[in-house]
Length: 502
View (cartoon, one colour):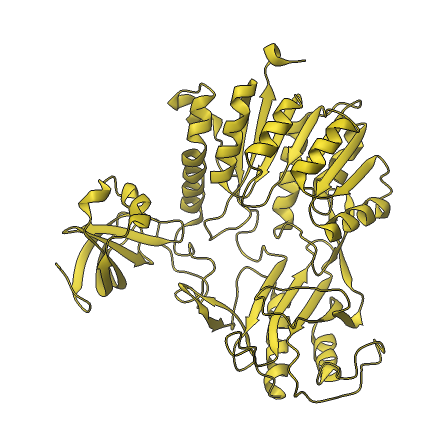
């Protein structure tokens, strides 16, 4: 073994992973260097060295080296940057080195955008080549990333996990079991961060512990804070476990239907938040007795401690009702960009039937309904469909229909009634739509397909399914919804060729 733990080595950083980890090579060892950037010369201290693992071969490719050239891999701590990259900047957040979010903060924003475009080009290259595009055409096809108007304070939703002491925080980088207790966060609004701190102070003042999922003990699980960008309405939602021994206090007057063993010290929490947060609209309490480590709202387990169970947001001239479980794009300004791009890509006609697959709460359906004959939205989550219907009613839009169920099955039903769509828009989760859905919609022969994606890899494989059916890729527009992270949204438009038109 050429090196050992504790050794200090000088390395030239050649590439960076999507997680913001620098890569270097020396003497048959692939080094992982958190915080290092391509082009830098650094001094690092070896922390751990193991045999090279097959699953890291894609990283080896980033170094333009043969995977077999590596016998070992090592993680190393950055000690000194001897020759810094021109792209290096000082991270704004004091939690940068430990928090698992915003791992690209140490790179200038323009460089982040260039890297995100490169990720999209690499992921879509097979589909674009299958569509007959040469290298220079691919470079023209994938447009520069549209930057976020606000690289900071852009998120309208933050989700925290409580530490054992009852303070909200984020998971530590590289170790999901450990938490970084929040002191600052530069991507949420100041009022959202203030809300999290107030809840932490309340929890510690009353000795309320965080939940331990290993021992199945404790009380406080998650804290969700949402703030609408245009209306500024603020939601604070506390999720707890239900251990047997808790202080029994009277139910707050705001909700006499709460169980006898009400949220401990709820009145003090209400007082603290209402006094300090001028835009507070909704204060909720969710009981989650399951071992699941995600925010989960079961029937009868959500209680309103103060205000109403939702906030309102404005988007594309429409009003949307956002409840705790509602999915809504977390960068409101860039959500408006996505709607604009979807409208431009769809090129709807007044007589058109539009299918909106994975429609969620109807964001695209309602925004585009004004430009076509009818919209059919399909969504797996029943609660989202109910919200979409409520949003349609709230905005007085009547030429929309929403159906709940598996996309592939519901698409098959929809092709019988109301029939083949003129245009299809889809915005699937990270796993993508998959071959069966893409094949089914291609056989329906829509004039245009507008694909909104949060994962370039699955976007590329899904677009590839359209090529044999005579579709060409007309445009690819990446959009940055999540500055200082590796995530990128992309709006791709595929058009049916004239020779395959039915």
